[in-house]
Image (cartoon, rainbow, N blue to C red; front, side, top):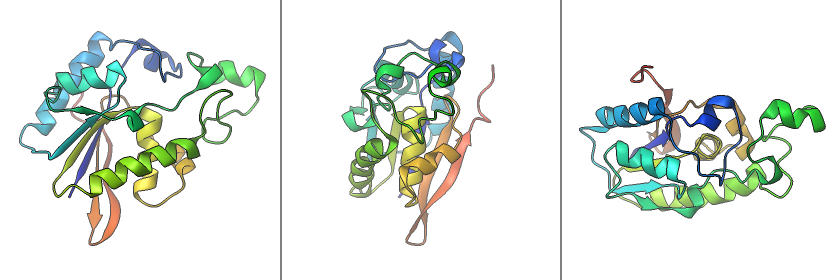
Amino acid sequence: MTVVLIRHGATEWSVTGKHTSFTDVPLTASGRRDAERVSERLARREFDLVLTSPRSRARVTAELAGYGAVAEVEEDLAEVNYGEYEGRTTPEIRVEVPGWSIWTHGSPGGETVDDVGVRVDRVIERMIAVDGDSLVFAHGHLLRILGARWIGLPAAYGGNLLLHTASVCELGFERERRALMLWNDTLHLTD
């Protein structure tokens, strides 16, 4: 059993570092091209379960990668709710809260990474219940948390897992132990 994770293609907000949870920001032209290139990486793969975040940037990435017709919207894959920090960059937030990090501080009116960890644990259990491979289209912070939780680490350890837009990750097993098989692979992408 393998789980393939795809972060959505670039948006204007992801390019500028704005925290984006519930705001619908479309993919940029290069984000759309990168999402289409993901299909090349997945061309010979079969998946028994295909899930996508409800946010349009993830759903469009799934469509451009060739999985829109089979992708099931999973609410638990929505990006971290940044609350009052939605649309703001880390440097902007740190003017008010020196040293702020989503990994340690959370967001007023939003979620903590541990809150999101509970959500991704439900998704992990759902994928493990499938006999075959799973494919997931979602977001940067959420997928980093999913990667950490997959290998049994606290959600905050996702802060150690860099993840670019339209990158490919694979989760699997080394014998019976969960393992990261591939992380943040962007070799297939060009600008």
